Amino acid sequence: MRSQKGGSVLYYWQLAGVAEQADARDSKSRGATRVGSNPTSGMAQPGLTPAFLSPGTAGAGSMRGFWRFAFSFLLGGSVGVAIGLTIGWVIAPVEYVHSPLRDLDEVYRADYTVMVATAFRQHRDPSVAIEQLRWLGETNIPQYVQELTETYISTGRSMTDIINLVALSEALGRLTPPMEPYRLPATQTPEFRGQ
Image 1 (tube, rainbow, N blue to C red):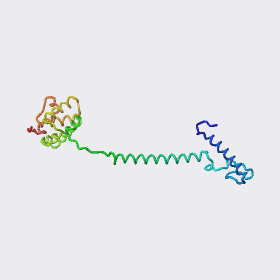
Image 2: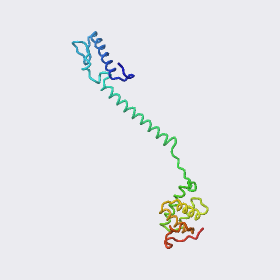
Image 3: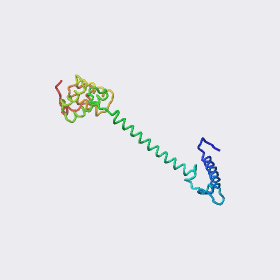
Image 4: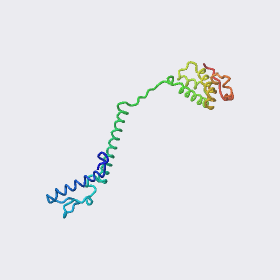
């Protein structure tokens, strides 16, 4: 009466009973008794056999299955971690490349310029801002800052970023009509007469 391919508990229990009866007949013929058997009758009594000695009982199979699963899980995890660490640290480790700022994508170039403009609002020195922006490889830094500022104004970016860019652009001598509403008072921003 096997309902699943090799997996029915009832099937294994019936096999265990048949095996015990066969063992009982063999031991009767030899005169030996088996654990859990009745020496007077010579027939095995399945109810008296301890669970860990009976093949196919729920107690024995489930514990063996658990330990097999736990061992397989730990072994597989350990092998996976070992292979991952070997590949990541020995075979193909991360290589750090020091790329120049001029190779940045436009989005990151704009972010860097906003950071320089924010720092400019703190130190108020246009020559320091020019030196920091030279790393971008722009030939005309004031024009680049002006165009970026106007782009930020037209796309409605962060008010703080626009005010910082307008302050830097004004210090570099590039104040246009769209920048006027975002302009700080003249006493707060020194003029830069370089470039």
